[in-house]
Length: 528
Image (cartoon, rainbow, N blue to C red; front, side, top):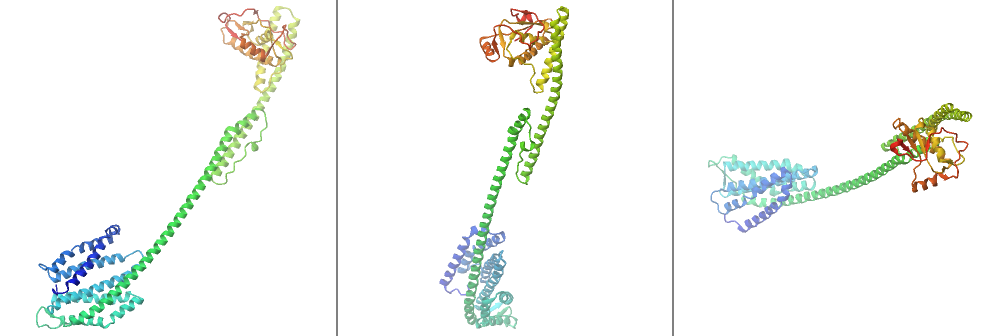
């Protein structure tokens, strides 16, 4: 707009480069969306500002309702948004990179301020003067640029970069620029012939020549510093990736190690728990029943050998095993004590029963002798009743002997006829007068079974008399079937040609007998 007849090709070339940069920026919309909010907001502001370029380009090409100063202000605003975005991007978590990026931002800002000076002077040299407002704006830009260079750029850079900056600042071209600035600033404080207009020094050619040289050096310096910063950032990023990969690999290795250790610990604990479970079941299902069975057989049990301890270490599971050891020792010890107490009690009962049994047998022997010497029916009836009572006592004493775990002492050496066994069983019943014995079988019982059969029949016959009406008769006799007969013949009975009563079988009271079996309805209850 300052030079309408300038090079249009150069302008279009610069616009194409700008559009390319804008397209690259817009293409990063996905990365912008993922950026932190402070950076995202700033970048969206930059994208929104560059969208207005087309409008202002049209106004530059065909100015209608906009001035050159307004276009300059708009472009300055767009570039300020980009510098502020650059400032936000330089604030990273790495303090070293941030400290290196901040001087570069200042360097970019300084170049922008020099560009603003050039644009204002270029617009003003066409008319040869500044108005008061334009001069004040120019003065603000000059002072801001000088402060930025002296306080931010020169002091921030170190090493080779500082040397190059000092080389630029000490160059004749830079001195030319500052002398032109001083001349413009001085013209504003001098007396001017025209009110509201400040005449500019005629040094445009010197300014343009010096600015072109300084701009090339400045641009090269900015590119060099930017490239170095990007390289250092890349190295930092690479180092961070390597560190992250190392930490991830280490974390993965630690995780795998923890998983492996957990698996081994879990497997070991599971195996120990299964062992403790099997030991517990073994005690409950095998060892304790075996100990009880051995104690019932009268065997001596060593508590320590019967309860082998479980060794599962000193941890919590080992403490459970130790508690279980104490429990099984207590259980076995208690079983042994109970068995010893029971055996002692059985011995006491057996001793008393044996003594009573001896007295009863002696009494029965005396009664048998008296029965053989007397023929008086009344005396014999009394003797038979005493005999029956003594037989009952003997049966009760035999019950005590059986409870004590021993066998009754009565024994026979020859087979005994079934009729004699029935009569002996009836003789041990209190109400033997109510019992009728029915049998026609010539059958004998083997000696080992005689005592048990007599005892069993006496108990059954006694139940029949006790639990039947008082006046009812009770019948007792064998009831045979082909299978039952053959079974008894094989196991406990043998046929005998004549009925004999061995010496050990006394003469029992003679209950009334009959050759025919009465029916249950007439005899009360039957015992067979």
